Amino acid sequence: MALLGARGAPLRAQRRVALEVAPPITMAGTPTVTTTNLFGDADMRDLVRSGFPASLRFRLELWRVGGLFNDLEGQREWELIVQYDPSAQRYRVVQRQGSRLDDLGSFATLSTAQAVLERPTRILLAPEREGSRYYYNFTLTIEALSVSDMDQLERWLRGVRGGTAASAFGSGMRTLMLRMLGGEKRVYDRRSVTFTAER
Image (cartoon, rainbow, N blue to C red; front, side, top):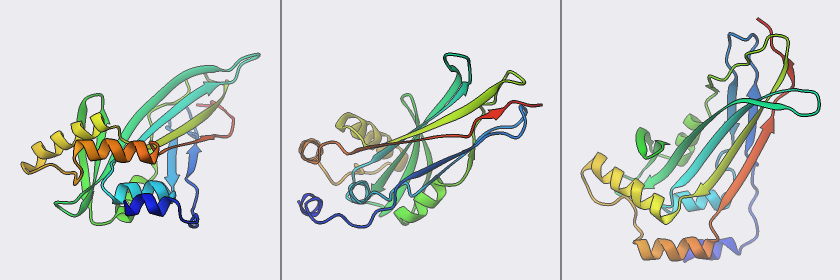
């Protein structure tokens, strides 16, 4: 209950999540996306440190500038999950694609995990029409996992480690806590500069 009490306290200094998109120099290149201060929000940081997995859903869209309307030419989506594993006392990063989960490693501190997540990433999403004008729109949604998603993650972690459940919370307690916390969710977006596709 200490976590709930902390939410009523005066807001601590927070650094806003920042997104950046660097368009490719040529059509043969790829855009690079970068995030900073992923857990700058104190409430979300406290949730993760208390054992609630956080879902980070990324979406990069490529838009071609038109006359009256712009056209969505392509998009890429990916999701990363960060959870504190109390049995190992480490933060685990997992990539989810549909029902498939892939282990991307575990880290001693949330700051270390965040540093890895914030490395610049190249995304295969390049413009196709030479001479056309384009821009990218980059969106990130950070939220606490639902109870069913938490159950899926814990079953997978049990299989990876061959041990007990990763969470210190029972299903009933997690449901109660998530309802009382209001289902933490943050959405951020950033549009790149408009550029002309050249070979």
